[in-house]
Amino acid sequence: MSRQAVAAQLIVQALEAEGVEYVFGIPGEENIHFVDALHDSSIRYVLVRHEQGAAFMAEIYGRLTGRPGVASATLGPGAINLQLGVADATTNSTPVVAITAQVGLDRIYKESHQVVDLVSLFRPITKWAELVPSPQALPEMIRKAFKTAQTERPGAVYLAIPEDVESAPIPDGLAPLPVNVVRPQDPSAAQIARAAEVLDGARRPIVLAGHGATRAGASQALVRFSERLELPVATTFNGKGVFPDDHRHALGAVGFMRHDYVNFGFDEADVLISVGYELQEFDPVKINPLRDKKIIHIHRFPAEVDDHYPVAVGVHGDVSRSLDALGDAVHRRFEMNGTGQKIRRMIGEELAQGRAEGAFPLSPRRIVADIREAMGRDDIVLADTGAVKMWMARMYPTYEPNTMLVSNGLSSMGFAVPGALAAKLAHPERKVLAATGDGAFLMNSQELETAVRERIPFVVLVWVDDAYGLIEWKMDLELGRDSHVAFGNPDFVTYAESFGARGHRVTSAGELLPTLRKALADDVVSVIAVPVDYAANLQLTDKLGELTGPF
Image 1: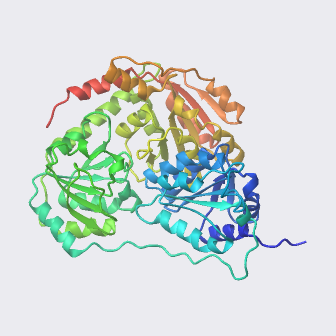
Image 2: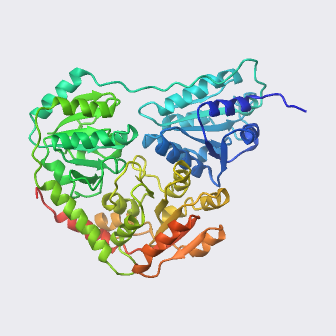
Image 3: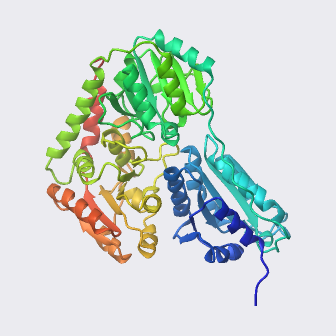
């Protein structure tokens, strides 16, 4: 006996029309029709073990593909559990569509079981949040959700679907709307002329490339621009890889807690050309403390207002076309001084020092060096928030866009393991590694079961120090002592094996690299536990605190 088509099936048809390949989530009583409709669709439903994991998976899938990742949950607690990953996506400028159930319209207006005003909860952390009032609204609202999520600046959107709307019959003729995509425009000639005038009068300009340059696919244009004008290029943590670290003009990533090597390039600069930079990536006070630099802001949209980011010229349009046009309009080449070469040499010396360190537990430098040795140029590393992120973001050489991922908008802990699962779905041909501290790992380690069940292989490298290492570092640095940061851990090898994954324990410095290579080659879900000695943390900040420039 055939069943009458209901609104849940229209939702799935609309998702298919948007090109959705995966929905990450956990079903609930109030959205069983939606999950059932997915069962008969072309979309793969990835059942996760916590809704937070689903949101992080949707975020990383959206970040790597440029298409909104989709996360699904039931009402009430399920929807609320999505919120951290949804907020992370918005603050990291990543397209996500979150869809949850809601109680029926027949009781949403009164005190009732599991009634929470979800739209009001999601509105501050999304670009758009709304309740679907009827089946007739679904085609327009789903199309708007995807368009809003993808349009610059991208972010998360949220739709709450009442259970009586989801199960309502579809009116005749109701169908998904055709997809249209907003296309970037050429920059205006006047903007380019004004920016060229600023550059023609500059003494020592520097380029800062951010996450927006990666989203815009502007890596090649950025290299052309740098080479044409002989300009040094630094990146934010979120922009790592958009300008290759092995290029002769590369300065590395800016964003460390202290005045790092790359900051000296900004100290000497009089003009800052920011390309796809967004202020939540890195506080501009750290690179323009005196507010004395002229700033050329190149992006798809105007800059946020900040006292330390006074924009002299805003160039708004397609980022690659803007860079090429500005390169054509500037009638000089700048003389590279020795600062960039010295910065690259100092970072290289740290990496070489790491390769040679044989102490156990391992130094962070040794771990970073061995990860770089084990991973290919196009392979993907996700560095979870904590001391791991600080060491990886400042030291890990990155050569291609979106191959070293951090959360630097919200800096959420626990994103790397679920994110690695989504990264492997987005790029099954690449090796994927989640580098995470033991604190962040246990926040979403249950998604190992999801990866094993769904047969999505990746490697988790757990840096084990039995503490929240970054907080310990910060307390020791600022207070001279630390407290309330230490904890106990399970046996990570046994823990991994209990999920059906493979577990590896590193017992000497020389074991890490071969263990990494074996785990990556095995093409299964693997967990490697490597003890880390964070004594190098204070040694590094002490060293950076004593540095003076220019070099």
